[in-house]
Every structure is written in C-alpha cells, then in structure tokens.
Length: 227
Image 1 (cartoon, one colour):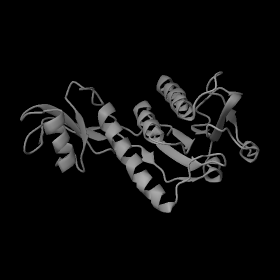
Image 2 (tube, rainbow, N blue to C red; image 1 turned 30 degrees about the vertical axis):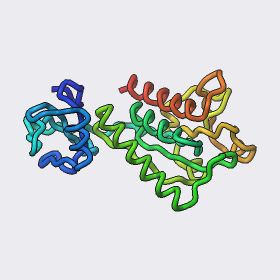
Image 3 (cartoon, rainbow, N blue to C red; image 1 turned 90 degrees about the horizontal axis):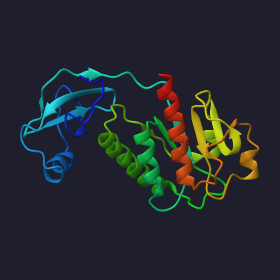
C-alpha cells in the first residue's frame, strides 16, 4: 500500500482518532450529500498528525486495513505573508497547504492595507484554519499544517533561518526554510533595514498572493528533490 493516501481509496477526511474513526456532522454531510458516497464505498481517514488508514463509508466508519504512520516532513517549511484584502488570504492558505507548507504565518507589514483588530484577527484565523483543514483533505496530506496567529513583522523576522523575499535576492534554499513575503506596496525602508537574508522569487513583479505561492512552490520543490 502507498505510504500516503493516493486517491485510489476514495476521499480523505480528518478524524479525531484513526483507531475509532468518527465523522463530524459537517464532514458526513459533505461525503453523503456532496460526494454522494454510499455504504461500503472506500475512503481514507487521517488524524492530521501523520496517521491514516483505509476505511469503508457507512453509518459507522469501518477500518479495512492497518494504520499507516508517516514521519513528519523535514525540514519544516514556513511562508509568512503580509495581510492582503478580500478572499485572497484564503487562496494563499489553500495553495500553501496544497504545496506542502508546514507553518503559515500571516503578519502585519508597515504598508499593509489590511489591519485586523483582535476580534477580527481571531475570527479570520479560525476561518483560515478551516480553509487549511479542507485543503488537507482535498490534497490528501497526512500532516495538518499550523496556521499561526497574526503578528507584526518584527516577530516573523526574528524566526530562526528566516529570509525576506525581494527582487534581486539569492536563490531560495533550505538554509532559509522560512520565507517572508511583503505587501503589494512593497517593504518599507525600516523593514528592508532588518538584517535578514534576501531571496528572489521571480524576475517579474508578482502580486502579493502570487509571491507567497511562488515561495511555497520553490521551497517544497527543493525539499522534495532532496528527500
């Protein structure tokens, strides 16, 4: 059997315990009413912590094979992105999850147009965590990434091995597995003055969400090829 769910065993869903899998009402509704699974149809369940197993759908979820355990990805990959407008944070989180990023770090930049107060930050983080969970199930990841609370630039800049994305920077590498992507207005002079390695993502001028996705794709590709 494949070490990770490969799609041949039906949809993938997160549960609290793969030994005694039980679906949430929302997940059951999605499998039953949207995907139209019938009793006996295959699916896989995972706990988001590296454990998963094939099952059969029904009133009770029936395991049909042993539990697989997948080691945590290493090194952990992290992308920080300055807050952006509208539904674009959800798009960024979805694509970062699909590409394999382990830590997703929204932050406030001096030139960010968007500013979340404490109440809105809590609400939006909960929404982004739901987006991440849905993306994990869609792309059949077995480790659920962490969506971190919104912080200021200084906090993410202080992370070990962080790098700032900017035009003209060096090639992305795993020596800096955390890449920080600024707002569409660009980094402020004060942010550029912070002593960080600078990495380049493209010769073109990218939209903020595109830059975050590009950073994720570069990091994930390097990690995958070096495994």
